Image (tube, rainbow, N blue to C red; front, top):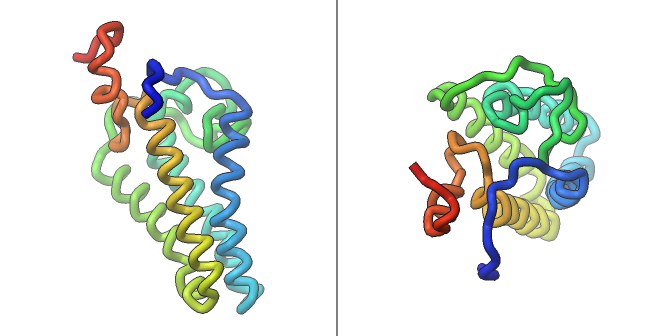
Length: 169
């Protein structure tokens, strides 16, 4: 760590969204390139599957996040900036269905292009490294400062509990 004082991130800026969008674009474009080398139809299927997974994540994961539950008709977070709120916000902790659907959808999305990527070794390496880099960037830069205390990846309590100015219950 850089030793700087951590704080809870209560709001995001457009620049945060653009940063993570650019990071996520690398594995997505790499997957599209690998699939497209073999089949235009499967590329379309992959892109449609991406859209379905986004809707599932919005419904089962994002609707419990404080950045989603804020007033307004659009979301302003690091993943969806200006995107309309398609579902009603939900209070409380995640239940088993929320976690199962969100987790399985994310894993299925990450594994979907694997069949084509293993046939394109260079693209497979770029995909794996860029996906790992995206995940590491989120975990390292966001989870320690996240205001969503119900999120399974949240590390704000453990990170900030050493800070005397941050009361941890």
